[in-house]
Image (tube, rainbow, N blue to C red; front, side, top):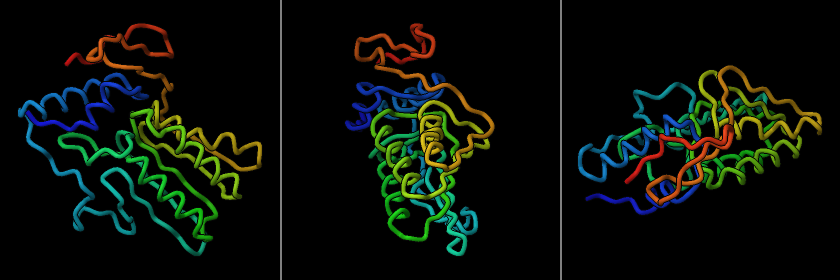
Length: 213
């Protein structure tokens, strides 16, 4: 049986802020993988022939493009939000918050950044590291950078949390926009695999979609 101890601990022992169906799908993929029922799939940054022109890829779920003349940087975060998890063995693109934090810090220190556009497409993800990344986004806004959150697809749970992080910057005179399909930010405390029922905090009902091991 294959094992990824860090991912197992993250998935079964830590709270998640993700759409229920996506949490269940991710659990099914992981269970199938560790039991040898699913071969690994390559989800590293796209090959050169598959890359969109002008984009720099940090991982399968994080890319960015910069216009040095205007100081506008578009950071695209597409996939399940996690922190320090290997590129997914068999499933969706991952938005590694450790890499996103590093990119935001680097951009903020560059002296070039004037407008930061967060282009989000995510069903949510792990709570681990989420508050720290949201705080970093607010710090970037507080430094005088205009921060805009944009969603042209799905922006739910942990993704929505990041999208609205810059809302606090409005009091300082900066603008934020969350566009298109957004969802509430509920929390999955633990899965039944740990012996605890899971709740959707937005409704307070027991959620039937957490997986048993």
